[in-house]
Length: 109
Image (cartoon, rainbow, N blue to C red; front, top):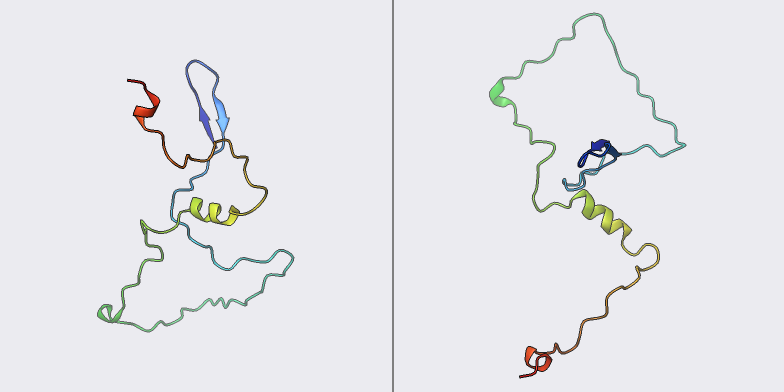
């Protein structure tokens, strides 16, 4: 949601979305009408010992998201999903000419 003011006019409210970022599919989604699975969680009041692992034995974790310049953007995914849906758009331009006319043919000497 944003506001735009141009000139001395009153500000206009508008909605916008950022669709140029790389597309990241979400995790598993809950199906509407399906009950969410309950998982028990153990809470304790006493400390739980954790095994000590030396730092040199820990493997570096890869980042969960890497920005790839060649990855599909959100807009690319939306356009691909909408492609072929609904009636075709009205063609406003004539089809291209088979043989383009030369400038000599258009302008007399």
